[in-house]
Amino acid sequence: MTEMKVQNIRLFRLHAHHLDVRRKKGCIPEIAGACGMQNTPPGAWETSLFNRVSDCSLSDMKALLFPEKSLLQAWSFRGAPVVFPVGESDAFLTALVPRDGEDWIYTQGIAGALDFLQMPFGELLDKLKQVMPLLDDRTIESKSGLDRTMAEWMLPLLPMEKRDLWNSPSLYGTPDRQTVGGAVVSFLLRPCAFLGLVVFGERAGASPAFTSYKGWLGHPLDPGEDAAGKLVRKFLHCYGPATADAFASWLGCSVKQARRMWESVSDEMEPVETCGGKKAFVLSADKDLLRSPPSVQRELLLLGGHDPYLDQRDRHILLDDKALQKKVWQTAANPGVILQRGEIIGIWAGKRKGAGIEIKMTLWDDASASKQKLQDLAEEYVAFRQQKLLKMEL
Image (cartoon, rainbow, N blue to C red; front, side, top):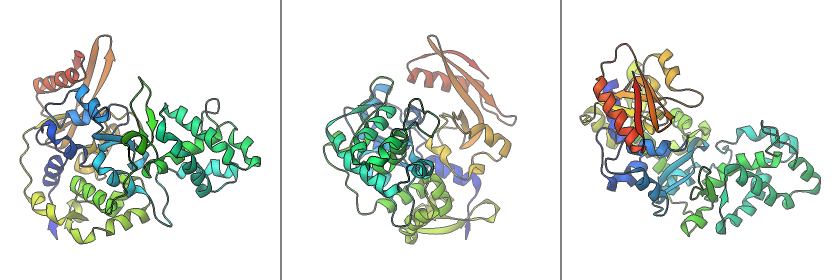
């Protein structure tokens, strides 16, 4: 097997993620469609696109979602809100629909509510699917509003003896604001998203808004003929060399589902050897590019904490020190990272204060990044956010 060096893998992935050089606005569908852009916390996808495109303002980005609707936001892999091209909806939605014996993504936590109601998962999902078409001609503001409304619409479909239980306080931490039914809906909305029954609509101030795929775009979701294969190819191109287990982790799906999808393109991949002698796979079409990746025109980058590049499952490729990895990948509110030729050399965070933003950076001992270059990058990012850089602490 061909052995792939760590630095070659980094440079290859930088190129696949469109981080080696900034592209023009016309490349946005290709860039956003590479592997999707997570939008948690809200605005994360804008930071990701900013780091890849040279001539796209914040208002331009928002226009791509609305009114142009060339990009779409919906719950996708790992149940997270993801922005992707409308034309690739099959890869980011349909591909995630499980087959017999496979679990739905992001629904494991529903078990407590099912036990409380003494109702099966499939029955409740079928009842929610019956009322979801009511979204075709309306928009609902806020996620809590969506949960509550759908739970109310489902109530008449439930057996009489289950309705009081359905309206009982939630078992999931917000009993004063959510019912058991609202919690059930919250879990089941991810499967509905994969089926094209709910997407994010035009944002209403600080709150997200929701409608159906058909209501937003004027036509139902086309499931496509090779949705699973498309998604596996995207993953391998952006994160290869990789394994089926890493694919399962990235999707947040069962190993069974990941391996079934993986096998759909097994004839398009081949094994290579990564650091430590481990076996992984690459697309055959990418092998030469991995051996000799393009040179990097941008040595230093400030990536947002949830940039797609940081979604690599083999984190040692980006950062070998396991203690420092814990500072980058946290349970919530990941910091941004300082990237040098594909390797993480520090972290950063921005804080809004008054009329601008203050940025604090931490470089690790062996880092050699120029302070002036970091200052320039900070000012560029803050200007993109239409703010002033009040202070940079290094």
